[in-house]
Length: 162
Image (tube, rainbow, N blue to C red; front, top):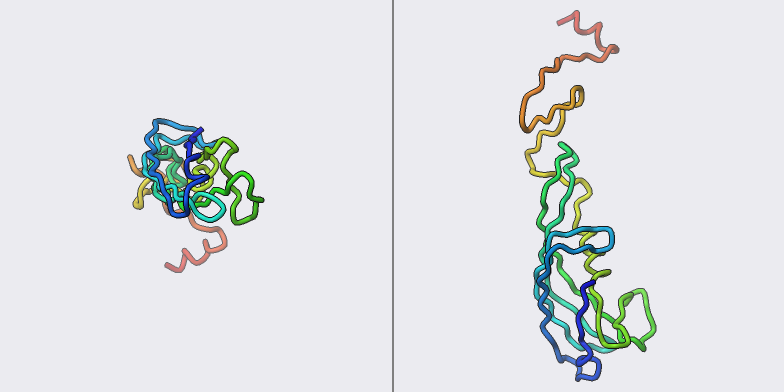
């Protein structure tokens, strides 16, 4: 759980801010495992809550969709979210709230933003050659011995014309 105490901001003037440093080792963000979380966030008192802004660097272990190898992907998460005060009614624009003791839990927000940072088709490197569709050889490390001249039987008669 990534929790910060910002109770001093609940009674502060609008515009008052605090700097929050985030420097942790391996963390679990719900079902996501990250290698680390490093960053600096600014907590600013705004109307009805506390605005959290900044960026967080992390690293994810993902599986490449081409070669199926696991690789480490660095991710920078840009954070800009308002945490409403405990007595403020929730709205779709402000789903996150401070707890009654004046602390905020960044875990759900960071989990959501990390999921959004993962590409739909993660690739270990842009020039990944993937796997041979016939024998399964990883083409990044070795060439396969498969015959590349498989011809669709519907076009086989045209082969005689060549």
